[in-house]
Length: 379
Image (cartoon, rainbow, N blue to C red; front, top):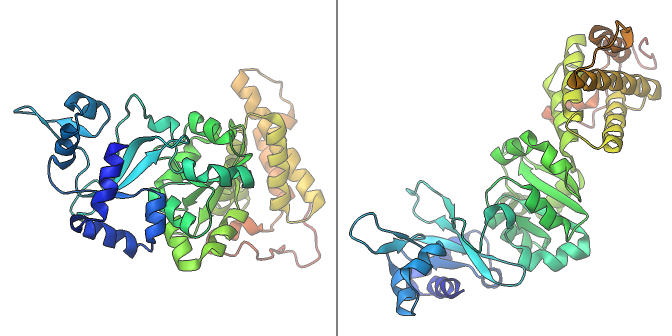
């Protein structure tokens, strides 16, 4: 808390003018800067250490708090944060437990650094901004999770206050448990090309195990939430939230976009990918619900086709579960992979579902059979 107060004071002194100019240049008002207790760590090796030791803090205590590091030679210590905009990490109770620092030197390799884990701070169990967002989350029964400090602050300034961030680390079960105490729904927001998105899709089981419903909202390519609200306004961001879907559903959508759905082999490959995604959903009722939704979207309103596709996907799921359990079945054609995929290709006919156009931004395009309007494919 003493360090946070010192950083805030430095931000509004002449030596912090560069940092304050940076924040105002990002569109932040002085009020939002004060609400989030932003500050500035001066350039130099030991300004904070000198100040804190002058107030009676020991080098050992400052090191344990992650504020300084010991010098390799000659004894003494140096400040961990130097020439950076400072973001205090504050518990729900209002206690400052850590910091994030954004480099102001463009030559600095590490753009952002966070406090190391300490006796009072663990990245895997802490989220940024919960102290200010808690009441808004409880009111909305929904929490929005973004990747960066500036994303949280920019959205709060735009009037979207039920927002937190996971401090640049992978989302953990502890994060989900914490957020589930305050919300029934958790929406994770990513740029479609973000590393965080790829990491999340590799760990779908963690999100599926959450007590609250976890969904994924995808921003326009190349935009983070801060850029999204600044360029398009809060309504554009809210529209992205409205289109959020579960993580397995998004992964399946990507599979449909990846393959040529006008080709039988492409449909088979997409179906196999879809089943792989469904296998990550351990709750049976939820898996069945998602399977039906996938089949319905793929069939584009044709109930007969939707039922056929759902049946084929269930057969393939059963085959995979059987293989996982190491059980053997007789040569029952219902569980024969070739038969299943042949049925899938036949039931799909030559039509192309809307999902296949997703990457081209035309998911609302009506897809028709090559057999002509009003003609239903065989099977």
